[in-house]
Length: 463
Image (cartoon, rainbow, N blue to C red; front, side, top):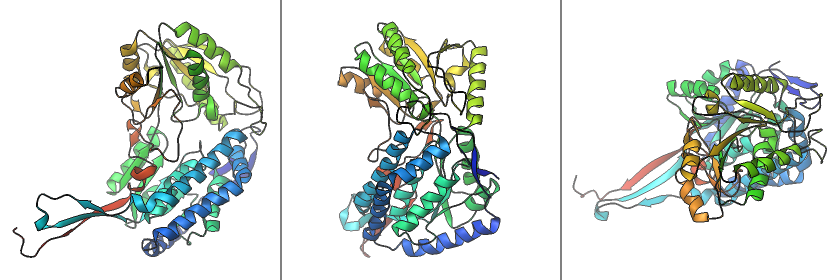
């Protein structure tokens, strides 16, 4: 069975689910298209009612959904509850703002006498969503809330280790009153990606995942002449300038690198610290990481969760070993972790100079890359020495300086004096190898709509 629930804390296989058949995929496509043809003309008020209903269910049943996330991917129960609330907030955001975000726009024209130009935003059809395991609900909601609000339908292929979370997403929308067929979870096989994207009723694909998966699926979409939106990897820089509040920067660095066990695309993976405060920062950082406690993710005292799977642990170990072969130096800085479960003991990695290829890698887990910067300019140089361009953070007591430095970092998002954490009312996305397109707010809801010009022109106007 390709789809299975394996508890990362116990490594017990809890349940398995068969892959969808070709006929089930075809049925889902037909029902989604039929539902879309009605949904596209449904009022924004009715769409908003359903978004708000979904949010209310998440808030009411927060423990139920959080337990599923902890069971299937291992995140702490407290973090899982935070993810459920964030998902509810996204539904509420689109329930409140989608109509305004998609309202027709009057366009200025050189000669108003020759036309009245309006840009309207119309839904396109079925969006295929391919989502990862690290945020079982947030990743799904940040696609379905805007796309359903825009009038589209969505078919979901979730990660194979989250079958129960995936099914609960469909159940959630059914309970909220969404018409049948508009959103469906499919335990799709790999071969179904091409089948779905080549269907003329499908307008595009939204993927969050690895570079490898993004390259393959974007290639299939491109061949089918379908739009793709890619949210891929990241190796976010966390710059600590010479005038930063070191104690607070350390606190946020420990949290920013280790939340969700470091399995976050916008995790603070590369700490870049000014030479004048480097030693002090590192001492405090080691102490902070050493205070993290690995254990049962359902235990409120646990602050370091297991990784999502045994394969994730083994892959990260191999990656660290390869980095050492390239000249990296590794220091264990975390407490011992339980033998039971898919835990990874936190490491600090240095020696990542301009000759070490590992400086360009993404370590998806509690491995911290550490760099000593000569000055502000050097910190910016190191930050931009990456194939990725997702997020980042700058710590300084001078906000204007922080904004100036942020403007020179080549990423899609930068926070000043705070690690980058997704919010319901802020756009999300990157550049370079981190992908293309944006999710959330007005940018996200307009990714899969037809921006159609309607121009009323006087019949006697000159050609």
